[in-house]
Length: 171
Image 1 (cartoon, rainbow, N blue to C red):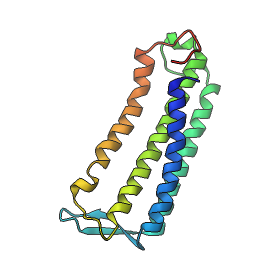
Image 2 (image 1 turned 90 degrees about the vertical axis):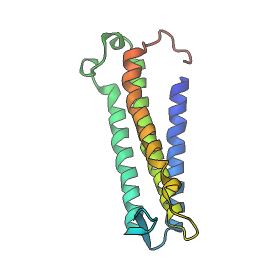
Image 3 (image 1 turned 60 degrees about the vertical axis):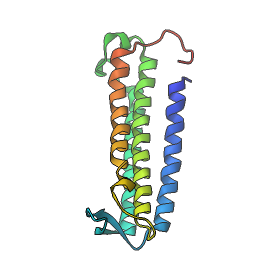
Image 4 (image 1 turned 90 degrees about the horizontal axis):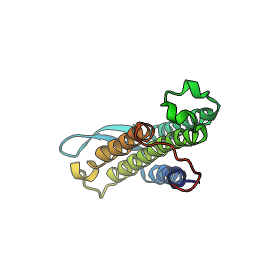
């Protein structure tokens, strides 16, 4: 197993565990009506029922994980001629499968991570002793964009600029 594959598997497992923890923790700490939108003064302007938020988060988790995992499992069954990669990769189908499957698993882990962080921030914002301002949750959007964009950009970079290796050693 390569180092990148190990890292992505660990990240995926930790993101699922973290998301389940965030779901349970936030459900317990949420009030009946959860504030989901705030004005510039830090006052809540829109609320959502706790159960709706919880089940919507579970639905997003299940749908994204099932769909991405299904697509990742189909990659090895796809003919090489149908995969738009350079001819260099066509001769290394096992490594290409590993790169593509790892990318889908990293996409899954990034969605789980962003959802878990969002639930955590929402839990913090709905505590009565927590001061709401732009600095308490302003880091979430840039971090989410960074995580998602780095995962999305990593596949073309890996396939275009990096060539397959000739050995099965750790990379």
